[in-house]
Amino acid sequence: MQTTTQNEAAATLTSAVAWLLRPLVRVLIEKGIGFPQLRDLLKQIYVEVAEESFGLDGKPPTDSRIHILTGVHRKDVRRLRAPEQAGDSAARASTLGAAIVSRWMGLPEYRDEQGQPRCLPRSAPTGEPSFDGLVASVSKDVRPRAILDELQRQNVVTVDGSGNICLQQSAFVPGADFGEQVFFMGRNVHDHLAACAHNLLTDGAPMLERSLYFAHLSPASVRQLRERAEQGAEQLLGTLNEQALALQKSDEGRADAVHRIRFGCYWYQAQRADKGNPSS
Image 1 (tube, rainbow, N blue to C red):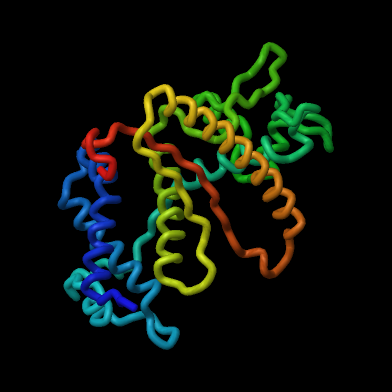
Image 2 (image 1 turned 90 degrees about the vertical axis):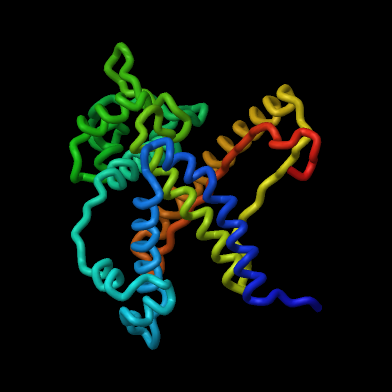
């Protein structure tokens, strides 16, 4: 049986990383982030990952060990390991909005007889569904008015003639707000890559990581497949969202209820670089 040497594995992995980095580098260049900034960021991430994942005997690695593992100079390791206080307001705002819409779509009390998210009054008597009550069920640290303003700005909700608040999107997909889009790109692609890394580095049961690929399709066929994919993805995500909300509620208070999950769907289409070469 042929075995893969360390050098062969490194070369194969490097080739795959070069391929997956291309769309990211395109975005960075488009947004004015050059190589020096990415280089400094990668240096920091190398140090952070080595510190988090490569300790010995339950102890964090020394600066020298991180230098050996990563190739980052010891002086930079010391500087990058210095404690910093950093907030992530974008993460909080995006996560809060997504949680509100998830509950709106998935909990029975917020859906009508057809199973669709119902329009909600701003407030209602105790025990009756309302927008303010929905926000409070997710967080009591933020004013419902502020959340409403933000969801309106993103065109996620509208207010009808009776003053009821109606959900306009079947999932929390940010519109033109670049900060929101970048936030979810980071979280979604991170977890997709984390699943791939798990499957490469562990011998246990692989995490779900599947895709389809076809390279001889007309524009009309692509449109037909895309519509089918979007319909199927929306239905599956809605079903899983409803089930996850119910299970999370039943798990409330359990000592082992400490796990998180992310399930996503994606679609990409483009012309082949070489129309005459099916393998391109």
